[in-house]
Each structure stands twice: as C-alpha cells, then as structure tokens.
Image 1 (cartoon, rainbow, N blue to C red):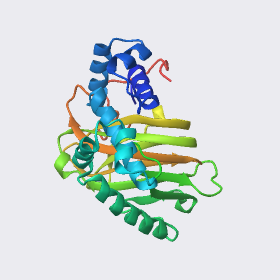
Image 2 (cartoon, one colour):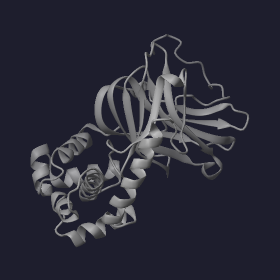
Image 3 (cartoon, one colour):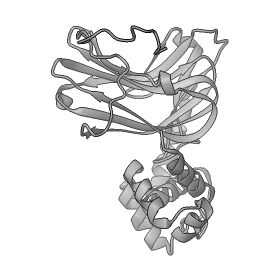
Image 4 (cartoon, rainbow, N blue to C red):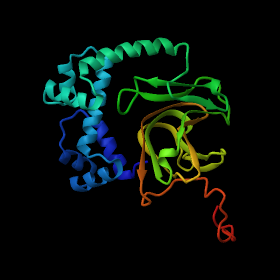
Length: 292
C-alpha cells in the first residue's frame, strides 16, 4: 500500500486528472515541494508524476473510445493532448494499435464477451474457487479499470454467510523465480466488502507451503478507491509452484488491475506470513507473554 504522502499525491492527481495543472499546482495543493513529491512518488511507484498522469489519461481515453461516440479528436482534446496526432502516437505506444482500430476491435470483442457472460463465469487463465464458489462471480470488467482497458471483478451473488470466501486465482511454475525475492503488485478497488485482499502462496513439489501472504494483517474493508498493494516473498530452491489472486471474504465487490511480478533485492522487506517452514527458532521466544 502507498505511504500516506504518496496516497495523497495519487488522490490529488486523480481528482485533477483532466485539468491543465502543472507540477507546481499539485505541489501547492498537497503542501510539499515539487522536488520532494517527485522523489517520493518515483520511489514508490516506479513512475514519474508525468508518466502516471499520461498512462491514466490514456486509460480514460480507452474508456471513452469504447463507451462513447466521441470523435477521436474530441477524446484527444478531452484527455489534454495537444493534437490528435500526438494522442494517436501515445495511444499506439501503450495499446499497440491506433485508437480507431482499438475502438472497432474492442467493441466487437466487448459485445461477444457480454453475450457469453450470461452463460459462463469463466475468464481465460483464471479459476474461481473458495468455500462455496457458486456464491461468487468473476468477470472481466470493461466499465471499471485503473490501467489498460479492463479489470478483473470478483463479487458475491448470493446469501453469503460468515466464513464464506471466494477467490479468483492463477497458478504458474516457480522455475524462473528460483532463488529470487519476488514482488507481486496490483491495484485493488472495493465496494461494500466485508474483507478483501490480494494473496500469494509458494508451494514445494510435495505441496508443502513455503511462503504465504494474504494481507490478513492489512486487509481492505468497506468501500475504497483504487489503491496500490504489494506482496514480497522469497522463492526458495525447493519451490515448485506459485499461486496468487484476489480474495473476497464475505459479501461485496472487488476489482483487481495492473498485476505485475518483479524481482527485488533484499532491501525490500518480505511480507511472508508463514515463517520459515521446516526451521526451528534458535531460541525460545515470548517467554513473558508480552507479544500478543
């Protein structure tokens, strides 16, 4: 999750995404120098403030291309590009196709997926599971997204009792990550959730749990706007499979977007909640029962 200052930067950027503000305006609004804001934002997000604004404006333009009949010139000006040509170049760089082709292709695909969604609860590559999967639904959502053109949505669709949970998940081989410290990051948005979070688990070939984090110590509750979350785990030599996804405990709706995996060094703290599997502590701990 972002630090307080970076979250404030993100909130301010989102509130003024389509304005003509300069960096000085954001700094004045937030109450810090532009140099400090730039440094902190880059440190936590890996993007400059300008790069973030550009990507988010392009995401807005993708939504407008799909859901409105605005001319491409109107969209380019609405999203604060100096010309249709500049917009087209930027859009093609991010989406690998010009905006006109994107509109045509995505509308065709969107119509097809909407028809299929009435009879299926499948999203390619993703598995819906949990205590009672029939009480949950997952889909690719074209209406709500943070980057790109869609997000993954997980929601309850029945009478969910205490203790029920659903998750949309994937599994992949740990082979390319052996010996590395791995950071999974994503954006999550929620609506009326009882409890929610990203999760990641690393198992051995025998199915033993080696590393695990489900954000239980920093869970998401209620209704929240898009926020950045990360999980950091060590992929040990005996690791065989990596499992990850979005977890929804109880009722509500949640969206996940911008999922990525990257190697980080040991200056980035692990979030592992499973402890060192198979290893005994060198000394007894908490003998005075002071740590709850």
